[in-house]
Length: 242
Length: 335
Ligand SMILES: Nc1ncnc2c1ncn2[C@@H]1O[C@H](COP(=O)(O)OP(=O)(O)O)[C@@H](O)[C@H]1O
Ligand SMILES: [Mg+2]
Image (cartoon, rainbow over all chains, first blue to last red; front, side, top):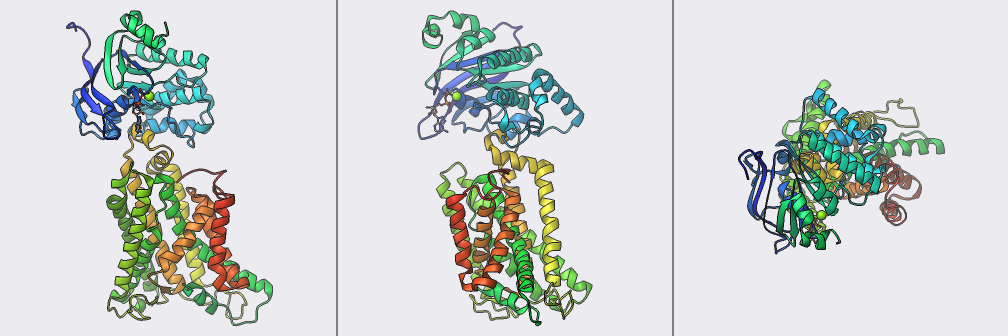
């Protein structure tokens, strides 16, 4: 990388992780620089969600190093990862179904104490997704899938993150809302957010991203600029249906 | 097993009672016992709400709370504390037992349950049953200690008399057919504010919101910056403390305790929690009062020896026909 490229915010080096006796991730390495959108694509079951959960320290780290903003996360519990400014919008959204929309958003700011700043961010989220404001007293579980996704993104933003990891934000959502959510991701990037985006919708993700990584059965097999990967024959055959 | 009913029937007024009076009396007794059951049911339902564990040790925890109270009565000579001293004695017992049971419940979670998180649910359940046995045995050992205050004998398994620190005088006057005592009032005066306080805690405080978040989605809660293990520990602490209060109220209301108290009252409380909708706080309260009333009415109109069958019948019917409980479907506010 050239000298004037922005500093690395997240660095994952040689990471292995898994559930049973055998590893699901095999020495995975990737990095995300400040203000970049980086996408991680790959088939179902490749290990993308496991990668994000390991970075968030929900999943045990079996080998390797994860550094965020210069801090080694090896022995950081998940609740402190958020406090350091690394938030995740998890796969399947995981909103709190019996809390109201507003309470869901407030949970995102659980570690914050400056009420005024939180109210400002709440208004920012409502400006990004006006439907959430309309529904702010409704229980989270009553929202449609797309609205829940917006809520999950808004909730993560309430933690005032330096970086956002999103796991398949377009999964199971009406196409018109997918467009809306990708617009929001672009807007966040323009406002300076650093983003690691996991997507099944590889074309949309690669078009949006500065760089991308391709994961196959727990290993990174390809990486490059978003455009390069879009033009890569192997990517086209495997993920773009061409 | 039959102790509470025996005491209750002694307290019935000496005047001839019409059927309306009998019914009123059963209702008063039922509500008082129901509130005690509800306090214990809350401990079951909170823990179930947050980690989906039926904490079989919870009733036995309450047994130990009542043994602690009786031991303190003896050690501090509380029977002799007259007037305001009597109030001080009751307050001291309530707080001591709440602190003790809260701390013990927290410790049980830390030692016996927390290491099993993420393992199959059955492991947790077996651990809970094991803890229940251990607590029962501690209660048996405690009951066998050579202590003066263990009236009724220090044979380990013998029921112990609990001194009457609260007056059993009829507040409606000796001539009234219906009896309402200071004890009935005491139950309400202690349990109602605690339940209101708990509701406020769960609804409005930072810890309460964290508890609800963990109950609804623990991984998401961790991703919000919530220390999930700590919140679960706090839940055990609070549920245990309420059980501690309940154990003292039980002892003062019924004047007898035994190593089996937690088992029997625990079963009533568990049934109450299921009946109300396990995981639901208001459900535990409603379920507790219903079970208290059912017990009293069964004692009064069927026969005391059938009462346990009636209660378990309700448990089975609930599980078969309405597993989500009375309030479970509508108000699925876990914890
Ligand atoms: N909780 C789990 N327990 C056991 N195996 C899991 C669990 N979650 C995922 N896996 C396995 O790990 C592999 C990677 O899954 P995942 O990270 O979810 O992939 P992706 O997000 O790329 O679809 C898959 O083989 C999946 O079956
Ligand atoms: Mg996935």
